[in-house]
Image (cartoon, one colour):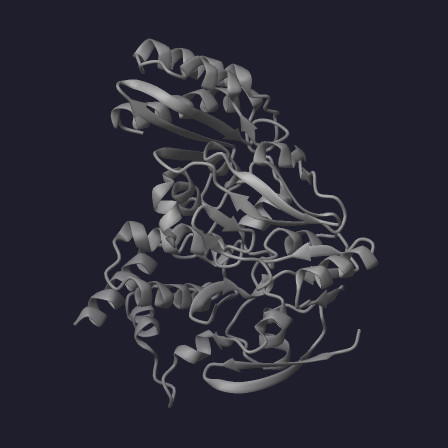
Length: 272
Length: 158
């Protein structure tokens, strides 16, 4: 049992949460409603539906549904994002779940996090002192935890780059949470890899940029030996755990495989 | 908790229901409106037995807050039947292609497939399978379901 509020503006929404300790923001509700049906409690939900913007250029409003993100021109210019949307749950969930909800739920396995990370996303937050921005990598502070203070609202993310990218997600069955996910973005410039970005999900307490892999590759031609080293570096850089979905060693191994496949796809158009 | 009046259009008819704030659309359809075609399977958005169309889009009614249905157009499985009780084309294809066994997944499966064909009239088997990921069936093994959707698409294309 909970109250359900439908405020008409963001300040009203913030005040409702600040005035009701334990109240939660909700948009599509596909994570939080499941938790509330499984024993978690909240005195009230404050709906942000129709208060948060959709996509404008490289701005992805937190209210953007995954189904709408998938269909957007932005997703076609950022293949990692399109791939993540394709693998995201089911059509029923995609029609409810939002970018903001996926990021604020902050599962280490959040499907949209690695693609947004490799496109240099910045998170924009509304709080007591107005709006502030920070790199998306700093938004996540632990499993299920973000830097949001009580009453703060994630307004959306601004992509810093578009261009060639890819995303892979390992699941046991369809509709599964990722056992491992990985995203890579890079440009080929005169035979060399530039602006290399690599990120992985479900292999650390937070979605992770793999800075070591990026540094290894930046500015170099993609030789098979180098990509093999990148595979090893990716496997070493992540910090997975054993859980009911997979062992840590499996996750390490698949991270390396995925990073290598994505690099091959983006540098040679190889099979991935 | 005090009840709130909810107005929406269900299967083409304007309806009003009294709901509590924590109710989901599934509770309203089955409990208040006596539309029992929509089923509760898992209650947490994984099985798709509760799939309905909200403004033409498939959604899990078990995770759709009732109050968000205000002013929306809802289609349940009952809404696919033609006036007079004749089965709609997707329902008929499921019946004659063996896509129904126990029938529990069928309303959600049929509605989702119906929505698929409205968006994509000539889906490949892979596209059908991808569209139906969120609808679980414990009886058929899915082959007859894929065949039903494929046949419905073929018939609609004439």
